[in-house]
Length: 351
Image 1 (tube, rainbow, N blue to C red):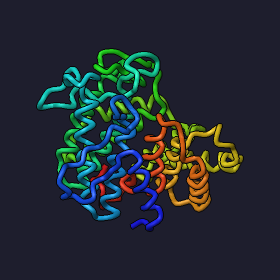
Image 2: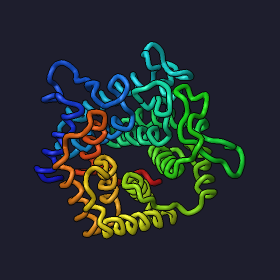
Image 3: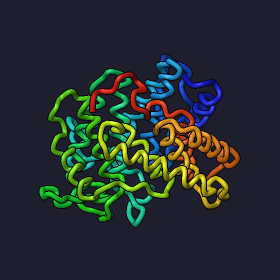
């Protein structure tokens, strides 16, 4: 269990985005998440994925059922909002009553069109699948993991080009209705995110052939791209560290990537990264690195630098309104990674 001080800060940040929180799990009116996640109509998929996982951490750290209720309610709200068209009148194309996630989930961008308009991001979707998987591990209810598998099957083909060849590639962003590609470039982390998260979903299903073809697609892309590099971007480094820790010591690529992330983080800190002024930095990206550091093999130097990063941003808690939600939920995960870490809910299904 975490100490009282980080837990108090953890809860304060969650209240910034999702407060007021219920006082108990039987407090009368069911809690519904406020529209404060920073996106269109108050919902943003990345922020709310962190929100769900953070609520599960709160539940386990405190033993209070109300936080599990919050996680459940947030899942329902996200599916009802981002699984529908922007006007809220209908489900996304391909989705049905029986398969409500068959149309994917929107990002939740404020603008509908344009360079930074709404659509679907692969790495947001896989993070949401992970959150659903953690719901199953926390509750024992397979419904959440099954929903993640349904979402995985629905979105997967739409992010691939030349899928049926020996050298498929991926795309970064697709339209809200999944009918066309919006950004053709291939994300550095998308293949490994898909590979790890889909394997996690498959393991939790207990069926050997679950998502077998989809996992093989990611493996082909990983093979084509070759060795995975550790970038100099703090968020990328953090998420690479997090993703690789699920298979570190089990698969060579993950073990090698984790070591590269460790080395790259050390080099950046040793070169004076933490001495840079705030105007050249973004808190939420550095909080991502702090999360990742706590998923790597324990390293006293990096853990000390992680503490310095968290302390640095305490002086700059007031941030632009549009970045505040994502900043707060990622601060929370930097304080207590909890449900983001393998084994937090006990022995993981073998992946």
